[in-house]
Each structure stands twice: as C-alpha cells, then as structure tokens.
Image (cartoon, rainbow over all chains, first blue to last red; front, side, top):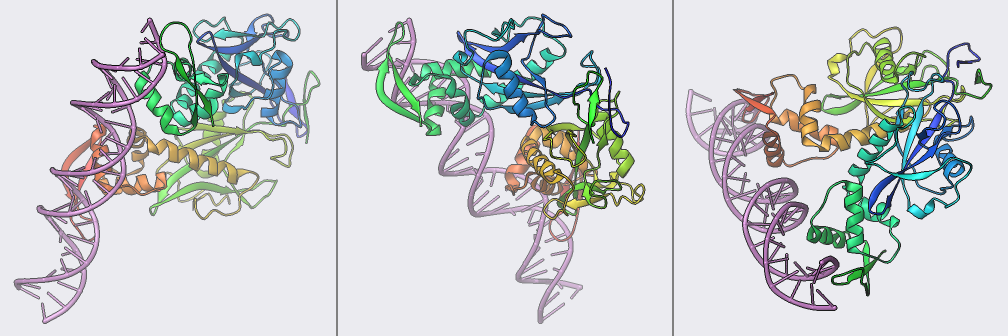
Length: 219
Length: 219
DNA sequence: CCAAAAGTGTTGGCATTACACCCATGG
DNA sequence: CCATGGGTGTAATGCCAACACTTTTGG
C-alpha cells in the first residue's frame, strides 16, 4: 500500500497507536494482548492498538482502541516511544506510537468484544507477537522497571492496583513483580513509611499462616 | 493539505524528524536553530528537521536534515518523544519525532548552508520558535537535565564536548550548565574520580588567577 | 623588586543520610 | 509461620575548613 499527500510527496499510509497495558495477576507481571481479526498476521496476538484518526490525538486513539478491543477504559497512558522503521509493517510505511499503562486486572471485563480473546499474558511467557510488538513490550517492561524504582511513583501510580486497604506485604509483592527483583522487607517498609503517602488504618488482616499484617490506605 | 492511502483512509500528510541539538557556548547551554526558508512561518527560527523519506529510518532523517541545514554531521541521536497533535502544524496532520543530541560548538561550520542562519541560541533566551518547537526544546532540556544526573552518562557522553585535556573545573562548569544547578566542587571531584573513567595526565594548566588545575583525559 | 592580598584548585574530615543485612519479638 | 520493629555496619552524600599554588596589587 502507498499513500501520497496533495503535494505529491510520499506519506505514511497511516499512523497507529499501541498501548502496552500491564497488570499484576496471581503475583506475576502481565501484559494485555488481543488476537488480531485483521491482516496482516490475522489470528496472532498483538497489542490492542489501531489507526489514529485524522482529527484525534494519538493518546486518545490508544485509549479508544483499548476500549474497543478489550473493554478496558479510562487509563492513564504514558508515551513510551515511536517505532517508525519503514519495514516494520508489511502493509507499508506505518509508524506507531507506543504508550504504557498500569491497571487493575479486573479492569478487563469477563466478556471481551468479538472473538479477540483479549487476555492477560505473563511477560515471561509471551506467545509469538505480531510485527515488532515483542520489541515494544520489552521496551515497556524496561520503562516500567525504571519507573517503579522511584518509590514515590510506585506509591502514587502502582499502588492503585491494590484494593484498599492493603498490607505492606501485598505492596511489596507488587513492587517485586513490577520491579523485577526482590527487596528486603525491612527496607521496603521503611521506604514506604518514608514517603508519607500511606495511612495506617489501625486494623489488621490475617492471610494464611503467620502474624496478621497491618492494613494501609493511600492518602 | 490532505493525504489518503490506497485503501481510501486518511493518512498523515507526511512524517518529520526534528533534532534538538545542544552544546555549551561561553558557559551557557545552547540549542541549534535554523531560520525557515519554507512555509509555514518562513523566516522564523525552528529546529533543523524535515520530512522523513519513505524508505528511511527517522533517526537517519534527523541526521541528514541536520547536515543539510546546518552542516553538523555524525552525531548520536537519542529519541525524545513524538508530537502528533493533529493541529500542531497548519499544513495538516503532520507528526514529528523529536531527537536529542549533544555536540561540540565547533561542529557547526562557520559558513552555514544557504540563508538559514543556522546558529546557537542560549536556552534561557530563545527567539520565538515555529510551530510547537518551543515545547519540544523544553522537553529536550528536561531530558538533558535528567541524563546528566547520571555521572557515568555525563563522563561518557557529555564530557566529549570538552577539548582534551581538560581541568576538573571545566568539567564542573559543563556539568552545571547541562544540569541546571550548581554542585559542590569537592563532591564533584570525588564523583569524577569515582567513575574511574578519567585519567590524570600529570601536567597542569593555568587559566587566569589562582592555582593551576590538573589536566585530565577520558580513558 | 618584594610582600601582602586575593583568587582558585586540591585535599581531607565530619555529619547526615541512605541502604543492606540480621535478629528479636509478637500474633 | 510470617509480619513487625529495632539495631548495626557500610557506603553514599552534603557541607565545611584547611591548605597549596598562582596572579594581582601596592608600596
């Protein structure tokens, strides 16, 4: 496919936006994928993005396509980077702007639109992805690891994944899954308190064996 | 202007790449701008970018346009982010991928191509810029400040701006200009040594009054 | 021409903070 | 069995003072 503008010069055949949406499911970092109903590579899994409209901001496109293809709505998207290699898509010259988001797993409805099989996939066990989407997901994971390293960012953005109130143990498991490395419990606890962004509810909860954990809430 | 692809759908009228090139001139952080010879906003200063060819990687475009418009060549470009608001360019739907680079001031030839007036402009005293280029430059400065905060990045990438050998005083002035904040001389010196990436040449150099400074080289 | 002053590079020390690691305790 | 809190040693960092070496100034 080709495209030309009214001045006769070559133009991209379109512009796409691809959201890389992460969540924590069963303690594992997962990414949201949808099966392609269209060519190329129909039937293969890919990021739930699509074409940007001519009077639309790309971030709106990412959010809209996400809703249409998976049912996930109202997320905060951070721009990741743009992939514009002319050979990245067999259809022609088609750049894509990738975005990143972090949502709660239940944001994905049980009944997903169409036959897309929109679903969560652990990042350490991804299926084969269409186009260069595997690269995009990798970059997203890398960015996520970096963001989570900032404790304040973690409390403000990532901790919203947990249902309130939550224990610090839950928060730590979330941190470790998102960061990709284990941390010392005492240090983690100290850092969390240090942010001043958590509030002790006073109550406790017992999950499984061992001493019950204090319950916290974000302020 | 409009553009459509062979499937009949609307497409961007093109894709541009804009390099944000920084240097240190007279101790001040400067950005490379060129006067526009084309519409829109002819005669106004803007980033020295241009249209991406249909079989070209955008980073190559940024490098090529930089060379054509300013004479600056062979730089390492880091992708900044993409600006794709449909209203950002009066010509039509025209996304741009912004890149960032850091070069020595003498990389800009004395005789610049055409009547472009390619020249360095202190970031704290920029002229009015075309389109949304002021925003792009701001984002570039922000990213630069963050990058420089990493001492190893600074030594490896930024310190290449100084002619070798250099004194630690020079390095510190570079750091402060790029970082946008002053630092303690003793700490800066300790950090520089700590990287293990600097080599003491043994000789000294006296610039103005005061004790002469030791001369260093990157390894 | 010499001595003092001023200016800058260099080094070290000290206090504070950040952080990793371990252990005792409580539910 | 595990959450919680405390404690300790080490590294990183910020701050400050002393000293070294040079140019400049003034008699």
